[in-house]
Each structure stands twice: as structure tokens, then as C-alpha cells.
Length: 245
Image (cartoon, rainbow, N blue to C red; front, side):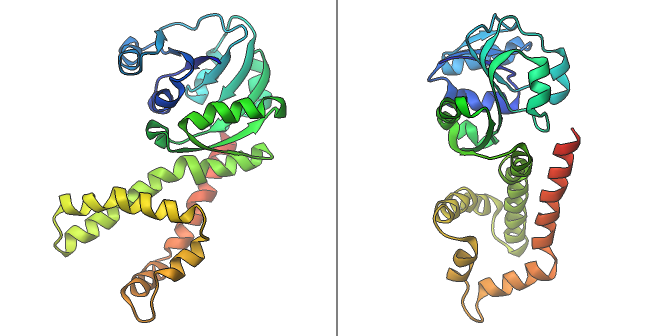
């Protein structure tokens, strides 16, 4: 596939590692960003958008930039990662044969993203192939599902990072050196994530919770402070914001 990635911000740049297997052109007005990606991944880079006729365009700019995007040519497909921007609006702004909305997360930098997809079913297989280069993909049934999944897969890494930092701070508060506390976190999250791929979260919790043990004592404190409800509220807040953008 011939791919034009428009936008080399945090998310766009994170996707380049996986997308570099394709004939990829990275476009951004910031030449320093483009040059860095060209040097690291050996892709092509431009500070202007080339003719996109017959190419797959991945749009990775901020949503408010969309109205200023004016592409020359008719793309084979538009894959947009703009939060809250619906397919109808994309079709009015950009000429393409097929349209797909995608919502990856920053784990794309390690090819570990979980990307939600929705759009024209005719391009489903190729969209899944394309975004599988940066991790796992989940094809959804509606744009509402994608807006909900924005919190679950795209925004929640920031919340999990907050959890990780809080766990480390708690360990430091009790006397564990900070470098040792942080040493645990990467392996901890990776290990738990691998188990949760085929184990229900409630069953996993029960597996490590013994009667009268340390884990249940900690769970009691979390429940007493409404942590579960706080995460559910975070999901709702994320969905409401996605719908209002």
C-alpha cells in the first residue's frame, strides 16, 4: 500500500514504527519532526501534502485542523484518527473512495497499540491489515461504539500511567527506593495484560485474592475510596467530550 500519513505529532509519530513496512510518506509542517522520522525509520518525508490520488491517507492532525485540509486528488481510502470527528464530516471535507475512523493509542510506538476501527466494510480487511502493523485491532459496529472505545483504548493509557505513578509513590512512601519501585511497573503491567487477554478481570482478581490476605485488604481500601466509580466516571467523561468535539 502507498500510505500518506498527515501529522507527525505524538500519535502520528508513534505509528511510524509499524507503518514503515509500507511505502510511507510522512507529512508535517515541522521539518525537524519529519527529518527525525526519516532518519530513524528510513521513510519518505515532506513538509507539504503530495497528490493523494489512489493512495491511503492516514489523518493524524488535531480535529480543529480538519477544516484547513485541502487534498489534491482522490484518495483510495481515508483513515482518520481524529477523536470525535464523524464519518459524515470527513466525507464532506476529503474526497476518498472509502472512509474509516480509527482510534489507536500511544503504545503504537512499541507496536502494542489496541486500535478501534469503524467505517466502510469494503475496506475493512485492508484497514485491519494496515493498523495491525502497530498492534491489535478491533472492528466495531458503529461510531457510537468507537466514541466509547476512545476512553477504553485510547485515553485510558494516561489513566493507567497515573495508577502506575501512584503505586510507585505509595511504595516510596513506605520506604522502597524510587528506582526500584519503577523497575517493577513495566513488567507488572505487561504481565497482567497478557493474563487478561484470555481471563475475565473478575476471575483474575479472585485468583490473587486470598481470605484475610494482603490483596483483599488493599481492595477494601480502593473500594472504600470509590476508585471503581471514579474510573467509570472517567469513561463517561471521555465519551461526553468525544461526542462534543
